[in-house]
Length: 304
Image (cartoon, rainbow, N blue to C red):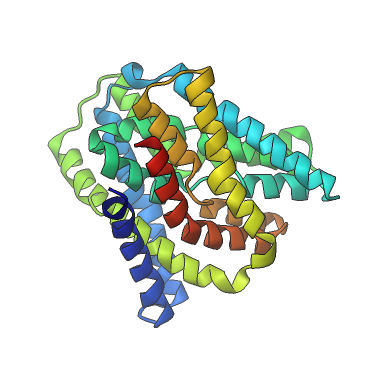
């Protein structure tokens, strides 16, 4: 089970890394391919599954509480740790984001679909709908520029989150589901064609972007953050889902795998735009993605 789950993902990620390393694609080409998958193919996958799902039936308050309460505890712990070592509030928030923001779509989702099956995709999307909203809202309040008013900070948060293609596509699909709006064939067929390449293409561009990121990394400061992300956060989620909210095994599996996914690239983009701890977050994206092949093996052994 471990090899059949992890190795196919590793092969596609490695293909993206190797082809970029040997200049089959230059940086401009990788950026264009990345935009194709993140703005078209992956949103098509999210919209398609959500539009066909019974959203009102699959929404589970206990599952959401187990995940986001755990993220709150984990974010707070890492933030306090960073403050203890004399980092500023802004630096502590960005570092805590790096220790808690997951690459749920490109790494967590494929693992879940391989193990549980594609019929669980909508369950995953309901959980991750609020992932960027929660993570970036908390972080932005600490990294907002000193001259910003509260209203300007809120506007920046709203623009960054609600213009996110992941949030938009899941929300639109959920609306179609709740309102019971059927997809006409002329829409459904091209959406299905686009979504069929989303996972493989997303993994490929992840590998390519890892190659582009490696020169920007400070690996020495990223190891602790990566280990916290891959083991401490999912452990907190596992405890909450098992002993506090008592969710079923399948949902617990989903939550732990999502929490144990490597650091998402969007965390680096926030650090880059804010000019705060860019090298550390870049390093955590790289290290946690590499190490996740081993940490997933551990969590799969625990959960299955």
